[in-house]
Each structure stands twice: as structure tokens, then as C-alpha cells.
Length: 96
Picture: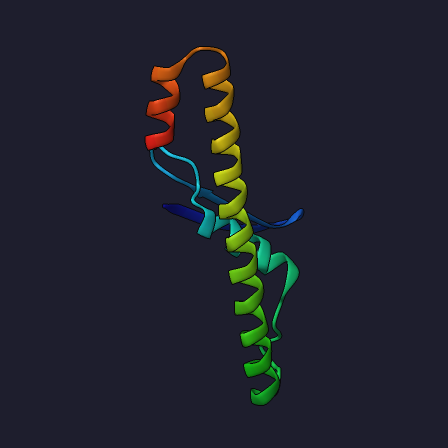
């Protein structure tokens, strides 16, 4: 993955790319977690430790539900392909 960050008049701009694929669920869970839970660099050690534990719990929850959404969408597409008579495509899709 290639990442670049630029600071300009618009604020912080970040770009992340992949080669021949989309971003994985872990990438999106991390992006979402960063938007929800920021931790100050100046936080007291015991508060920072609690915040890190909370952040990890948020990340794991988001990751779980992203993966559930992916599985649900795959099931829907598989069933739509079957309903339209594309058993061969449905089988290939299920194996992905």
C-alpha cells in the first residue's frame, strides 16, 4: 500500500492506494476508528492506557461488523445470481 500525507491550506490530506485491489476491512476499520476516537499526545499515562484500550475495542467492533456486512452482501449477490439462473457464476462468486 502506498500512503502519502500533505499539509496545505485545506488541512491534512491523506491518500492511500492499493495495487490491483480495493482496501481490506482492516484499512476501513482503522480509518473509521481514527475518526471516532482520537487520543491526545499529552494525555496522562493512565488515561492514555484507558483510551488505547477503548480505541482497540472500537476498532474490533467496527472490523467485525464490516466483515459481517461483506458476508451479507456476498450472500445477497450469490442468491441473486442463482435466482437469475447463473448457477456457474454463483458458484464462482461463493468461492471468492
